Length: 201
Image (cartoon, rainbow, N blue to C red):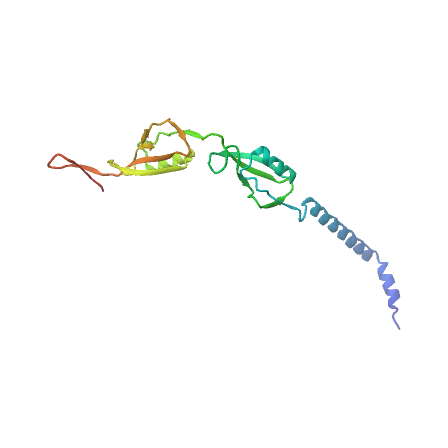
């Protein structure tokens, strides 16, 4: 008996299960297509904006450049430096030249109009490690140590700025070059002539 393949195919195509499978496949394919299209639109696929070079500009000048490119910004910090003029943009994150999506928030650091001041902490008679950690934690950027005669090594004896001794509580610029006077652990011996000699450990 010869099989009629055309009739078999027709009967197969009319089978309910097969019809449901084909229909589900078509619907699923349409859903996937729509989702991918939606994601492309939502993420603005291949639509990146280069962050303009606004370093050194005042905020009212930079505002025009950023808003024209569809970028938002937020001033998050200020420092004092002589690299740019007071009130000008010093740093921008993400970095200048980076490519970002439209509407991205940029984080800006500006140069302060005046030097930031801080009070000198009371670190006398503390270890140099503790003192350095405390003083740099306040924002001082230039701290060096100088060993002088002292019975206990690495114990802070004083703080100086431009040759002047500072007292706890004195207000000085955070950019000041502070010098920590630190004990060297030496001992004093009286010579026969009555002179004083410092002997280091």
